[in-house]
Length: 347
Image 1 (cartoon, one colour):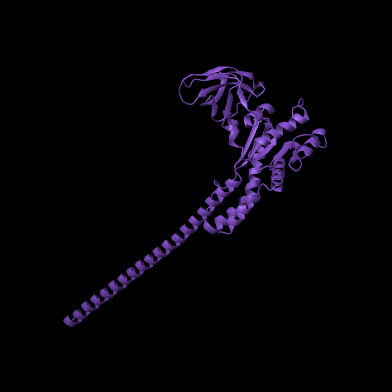
Image 2 (cartoon, rainbow, N blue to C red):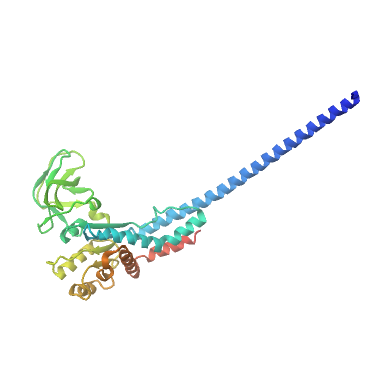
């Protein structure tokens, strides 16, 4: 049996122990809370620094993209092609890879490393492949805007948005027969001040060339349209500021001088800096045409035939590199390289 004194001492010891335990637990909780608060403050500081770096990268990225687009709106490849090769699309795809790797890969590597910011949408150079299946040189020149398009025969634009058959001609009155394609549509078309679009007509000139119709965008008053009325298209202005690549095959019946004149007409329509363009042609090396093109476009002309054996994907990669180098030799990318160099010094 414990004495009352012993019981009092035991009770006091228990109370003391409980107090100590409570103090230890409270102190531990307080220290844990302090550590959590410290971690939270550190996390906020890290997040703030990370956010600041990200915002800095975003600013550099957007500013660089604006500067690049101002001096290099894009590259456009006009030409005729065929479904079996689809050469324009394959060339522009390969060229896009060469441009991205050569001009921008170092910039994006620095951007990711220094700021954790990454996107390609704004800086990436637009490269358009306007390869048109089974279309003649007069049609391609008119489609591009290098030659005007006119209404061939009188027609009437209805007051509603119904389609009206239309025939088109060049400036000499020769009918133009276009191949309507989804990737090279005319965009908004303006006739006698009325905006609208071209659509497939009810008939075909042949299996590849449909007739066309015109429909206005909004209802209005009926408008009679006489022949020789000019036709303006959105497409004719869309790529004028881009660096041009021309890959048009010469028809057998076309004289070399007329062919070279046609190429010069397309170049004259462009708003890109004079002397920055590339001409591609498939012809026998040292043939009369090869020599004529070399003489007319010295330093800008590439004979594709020796480079495209078998038309394999690797051949397009080689050609794309040579097209890039040809532009580079003309100074087409000098300003872009300077902008990228200056941007990389801001990290």
